[in-house]
Length: 295
Image (tube, rainbow, N blue to C red; front, side, top):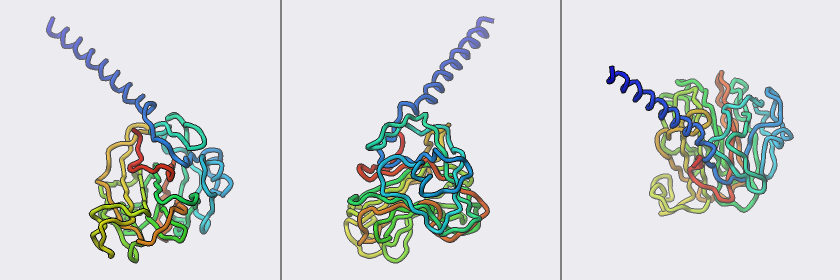
């Protein structure tokens, strides 16, 4: 009997300890930070279901940027938030600090409405390095072997680094660029749609010393303009989970200039019967870091 009582007491103590630990974990995001960003797109201020316009995109965007434009009337509307809160607090340069409890909405892109259409945010002049991070729910079915250009970082003349999805077998993400014609990085596999992922895309027009610069396409040099991409699984609540696969890198066009704008939606012409969700989204160009995750 004494042994039984001891076991019951020990189990209760362990359960209490586990509850305390879980409580600390669930509250941990309040002490984490995404750092400083130039732009935070929270998607708020417009009714769910309303189509995107340059006006309501401005309402949904915090920070200093060079305006919104719309390319080819994207089938994109405001949607209820994907997550409750942020992975951590975030400070918008020139604005304020938003706590991890900040509520957000998302943008829904209906792929049955066609591709080749995006929303476009201008990046102020004079920034050779920029990056973007945030939540995207990937919904494209597998085995269609189509590509979707979800989000790209462009210079002022259209040279680019693109976060791209291929819904073949395996389903994967990569970087596309115009380094020499159209080229692609290695693949990030292990994605199982529908799946919400945290992406972090970084691009530098300033040459970076990296082993990949000595690989094809030409020229083979010790340093080159470069892009990097990471994906992370969704953790509990609004937390960022484990990295999916490993970091992929891609060479950029040798003549790429400073960051000029970003496009969000589908810059390709692929279609499917699904709706993809974007947001909240973050952009950095004053002090861009890679990867941009809550720490």
